[in-house]
Image 1: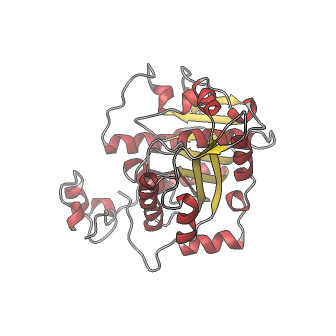
Image 2 (image 1 turned 60 degrees about the vertical axis):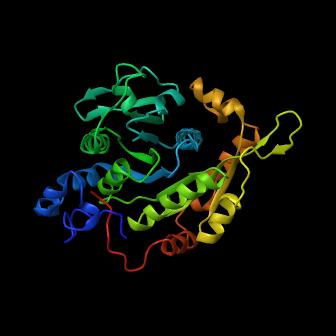
Image 3 (image 1 turned 180 degrees about the horizontal axis):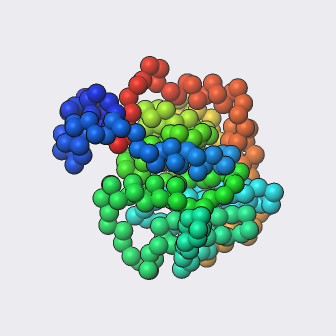
Length: 327
């Protein structure tokens, strides 16, 4: 049974079994969706000045995607010669403003579009959290409205020239993920970093996210195992809080022929830094977790196009697969 969307430009759009019950079924069946969205080309042009675009994904919630995205951006911005931006497309749970210390800030309009909010001179941030009157406000939107705000973030924000754009996503393989893949289809994307925790209940959903990347032909840069043991700051012994009962990310990566970029141990100081809106990497630079982050940033797989990475990308792409999950 095929449970995935056949794609809005497919001959089966609006007609196949997965389309039953979809609110856009009649629209797709009419053929109107086969026309390309003009915003895709506009976004491609807008982001042509961005050298590297990286998505942070995970099928599981609560594994630390936003924490990783924020600290990856901080680590990259430590090189003051680079321009970094962090885009939060978690529409219903925007935690990036709190994590980077920008809660309560607002977005301003200029002649060239929305101006992102800056953590540092070379680190810009955009999130729907900046558009809410209170951080406790709930965003109760259906798919089309989520798609619309993601389109605006990509097309209407004055990103300028960037070295890296890091995109933090919500858990799952639904509206936000399909939208970001569709709208970035006219521009080069380096790929996705997949975040997991060691236990099987997380890995099970992460495998679904990997399958999603395969279906939409999104290159996978590698996997990060977050909350990978607890290193006691006193005695330095490691305890497994979330035991890797099925081998953890290491075995999953070996089975799927994906690079394991690193393992980030639990550290309560990370949570404290996020709550207080400060960079953990600056607060405790010598901790095992900070060292793991720096190792990931320096990984040969992350930001360098090597023959090894290209062969990995090809190995996780379905041969002959012409289907699309974009809607």
